Image (cartoon, rainbow, N blue to C red; front, side, top):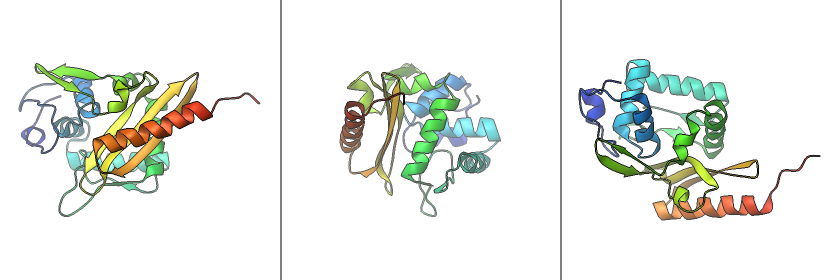
Length: 195
């Protein structure tokens, strides 16, 4: 994927891609998933749809096809501006997490990677749950001023998968603690039974 100047100039978290460089799609996915790289998000969006704006339209169409009724995307990075906010509800976050796990099993293991190195820069996954228990295997962190610190997390044990959604916490530690409490409770209390 070719990195445009628009992608290179993105504010917020970065994967540190260079302008006018070529980057493998899997590297960009790691930059998006692990590091929340806004530059990587824009580069993928431009590659797939021609522009970040056109990609946001595709995101909205895909969300609708999944039955996500309380989400609207204005851009590929998720960053808010003075004029608009991207929106996504907790139930919609869960729907998207399930679709990611079920529809993209070849790429889902990336969500469990603890770190990656690109351009000689080692970057850690922002999902701190992955460093605490091998049952936790994804998914995605997020943060904006309006949304606070958010985490859609997943855990799997003995053939049972759980997904938690935590939105609006005050810190990355708070989102990790709340997610860990929800998933630990679910893994301890629930089990799959054949009726």
